[in-house]
Image 1 (tube, rainbow, N blue to C red):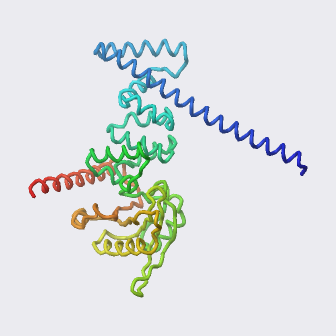
Image 2: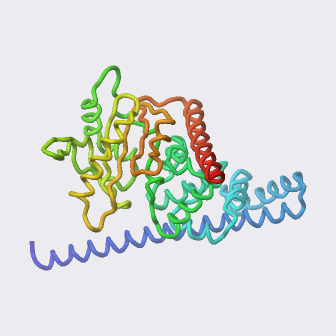
Image 3: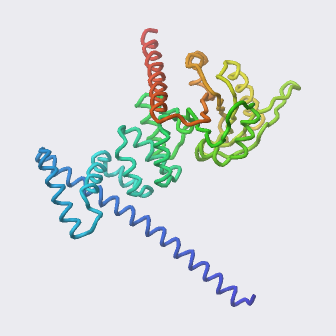
Length: 350
């Protein structure tokens, strides 16, 4: 290939790269502008409706506006879409928050968020969209799988959840409570009938990509059956990961039955060995996840695992119905909240 042709190809590639970057930036700018416009429209309509305080007037003004705007600007301003805009301005009432989110979230993201009932849910999913770069399809999937309710953070008091979400928003800081989940959905493994722990481990490694997607962004697989030697005895860690945002090694132990107190001691040994021999100066202390088919809440409370670097979670090989999942997660949140309340009451009497 002649030097002249090589130069031409190099220039072509550079120009194409510039065009693609520009297209991406233009698309981002347009999306931001559209979302802000819709917020402004929703905010203005809400103010007008609130001034009159009559439901019939509110319906009338929205219907009239929709007809006029659709006639002039097209189908983007139907009654349904204007209602979306009003809801958007209602639940995201702080314009500064909207300005920070529209840099990364599209209008279709916001439509998925605005009808969530709890403000903490909306904040959680909005911040995780930004951190993990979820597209709209992924966001809907996470909402449908009740990710917020499955994270450890949902079991905390509201004021602590708000603080952690503020850290995530302001400093892009992920905590283990935002990373850990319970339960984990492992239905993609296709395991049925009787099997052993090694079969579960092998199935995970065959579909490691799906497993990491369920764990969440930031996980990198390091090693399986990592051997450690303590007093000339051999021990083997099922799965070892590294989380680049938490900057920690993460041990995952797989159990077929219910969680047992002895599992805590085993995990503590692994974590302390890794902390002593494997942790790099720039890293934080290792943490562990014990995946089991069930757990008893009093065991968890008495062992004070909520204060340790060990997270115990169930895994499900078959997805339950949404009703059963809601019932299970609601009960788990209530139990955790009641436990925290009892501890606080106990402190008051000390």
